[in-house]
Length: 119
Image 1 (spheres, rainbow, N blue to C red):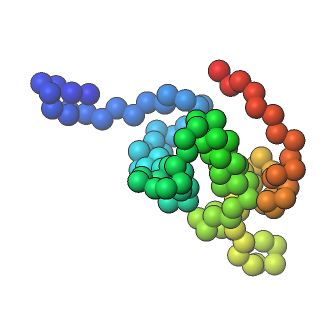
Image 2 (tube, rainbow, N blue to C red; image 1 turned 30 degrees about the vertical axis):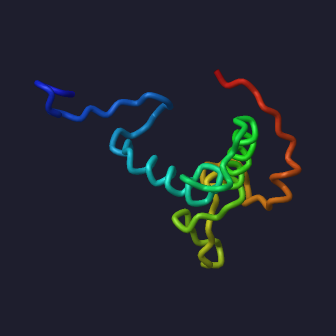
Image 3 (spheres, rainbow, N blue to C red; image 1 turned 60 degrees about the vertical axis):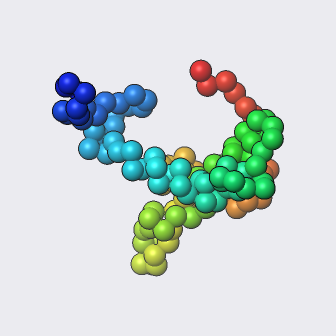
């Protein structure tokens, strides 16, 4: 909230989603995700030879990137200990309970996927 052109108070509000703790709302999470995405993905890096000329091709590539990121890629921040006490790493989809194991790339590419309208 601004008063006389100066920032007076920051008000956090939920725009999308339910049951979100307001203490967890932060732009730093989004900025970290954007940086990781830019570093991993040549098509959206700045001043690169691998940029996408067609929006549809960029959309397809980004869909594959985020599917791999969420279903196949193990994240060191999502670690846990199994029954034998060995430290293992989860992917975001497994951590959220969407899948029961970290998928291989073959499982991801052979999963029946259909685009649906979400709005």
